[in-house]
Length: 575
Image (cartoon, rainbow, N blue to C red; front, side, top):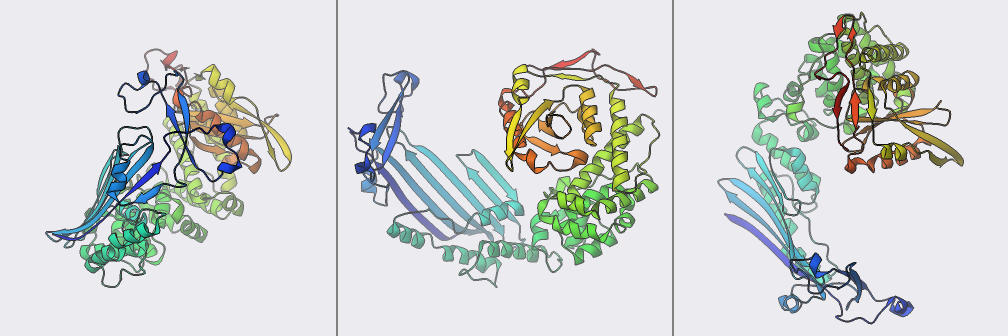
């Protein structure tokens, strides 16, 4: 049953004179009040479908200047005015239609917004059409909602169930209040009457909220009302502040059933972090920090609670700051993969290392997301540690503070590079790309001129030298075939920034100064120029290496696995 239907339609006509004696020399001050349109004519042979009225004999094409009849396009609802210029080759015509409706079928309420537009440009015979359909369908018995988004221009069809991220985007993007921007005041008033927002919103609020009225209600209020209705119908047991927890980390019905419909327990269970410590902590603290803590829990295995409780109060304070700066994983990607091969003493050392970094003001000051940066650093450290142990080299995580950790990280990088020396690797690139990217870059910063020299790392030895000099683990990246590593250096090479680019997209994945610090200010402009240079070649596949050579060796009697038949040439990629 349809309980509300709203429609509004209008037309736009931009009319040009079908003759023009105006040339560039005539464009003096006397024509300042006029407006002009330009059209481009092509040869008939280049447009076999004959979609235009007029063509040119010039093979290069021709650009024509036309004078508009009015200072701005006409906005009207009169169909006679539209039909008069519907097939006029000197008129740019647009039609716009929007319909909003509310239906209830089997106790399910649907809010539907359909917009359709078509336009025909000057000198064009046919119209181009675009349409967009958005639907929010709510089950008034269970609280479940389904979202539909169909866009003909983007060729997109999306259907989502109980997806709060999409729901929030719908509502914040003015699902209930979005209108056409019109310059005609009478049409604007007619639109406000035809598309009455209060009536449209009032139908929703009567069904899902008894506390809100359609007047003076914001989009965020509507979104929170959706969450309240959903929580009530699903009988979810929530803490006092639960809107962001539902919005960002809704655990799905699977985990709610397992945890007596208690929200915090269900979210923690979806991460694999359900423990007495975290249950108590998250009932008292900001909920979104669950994501930040999940970065570190994995280091300590199943007995993580006793190690997490030993972390500095500064760690927990910083986790609240970084809440809004981290991306939220989907439910299927949340489950933590615990690292199980670390010994008890090594886990205790990791706690000391984390506390040492977090209590260092310089580290906090120079990193926008220090916990995320520290997590990635420890990830690299453990990954190298595991690789080294696979070759039966006797090493341990013995560092207990920031300084000793960086020294140990350097040693792990060296050992990891030593293992890689079992492969002699050299990447070969297109000469044109190399010459262009490695051209010197000169910039000015605070009235001082700097010249930088980009160097593409091609040989394994260059990766190792760069890592040893910069005190970071770039040496372990020599086997990452999808990464292009560029070292941006000063003239004497004593100051530099190491950059990693994705060969497929040309995007800069990371850029690091000494000891994985952020690049200094005077490097920023040069890094931007380097980024634009690399991106220039992404669509030409010239960032891919032409070929790469690897030779099999053994370390401590263990042969490095090699799936290739030919030891000398691994593969050859066309460019």
